[in-house]
Every structure is written in C-alpha cells, then in structure tokens.
Image 1 (cartoon, one colour):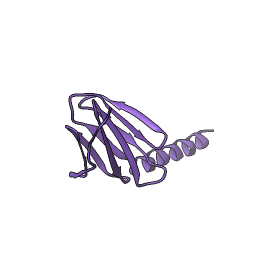
Image 2 (cartoon, helix red, strand yellow):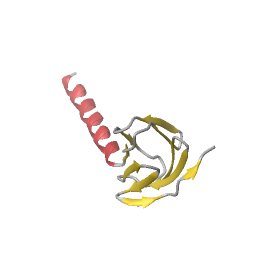
Image 3 (spheres, one colour):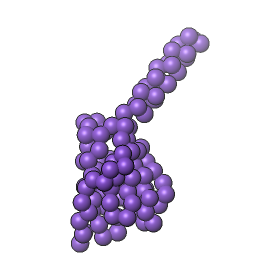
Image 4 (cartoon, helix red, strand yellow):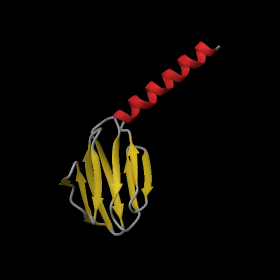
Length: 102
C-alpha cells in the first residue's frame, strides 16, 4: 500500500511540475480590476496581482478589458504578460493596441 501511495504521489508531482512549465503569467500593474479572457478561461485580476494560465493550443489570444479599454494581446507558453495603463507587454515588449470599449 505504501508503494502505491508513493507511486501516485510521484505521478502527481510530475504532473503538477510539468503543467506549470507550459503556463503563462498575467500581471495586472494598473489601479483597476483587469478582466482576462483566453480560450474558455476567464479571470478577474485585482490591481498588483497576477494569474497563471496554461493554454491548450498555444499561442493564445488574450482578451484584456480594463475600465473603458479592450486590449487584444497574443502570448505563448512561458511568456510573462504585464498590463500597465492601457498597454499590454509580452516579455517586456509592447504588443496589442488598446481600443475604446463602449
């Protein structure tokens, strides 16, 4: 029984570590709540917080909404996405043009 538990725990740890390796991190560096939609995943990120998303079919188009702005932003696995003001940065490079949302 102990062997089975050890094998199951090892398989769980390998799965957890491997899945985190193909994830992208989205950081909200604004003063407002950021709404993120990607594939079927949707999340609201508080100011100063971040969230991790694992795309099923990378690269993924992120739909970012903040106040009256909509920002489309494409990112791949292991990318760092940061939202400042009404601009999206992927690995430090500005991407995506914000559009006024009505």
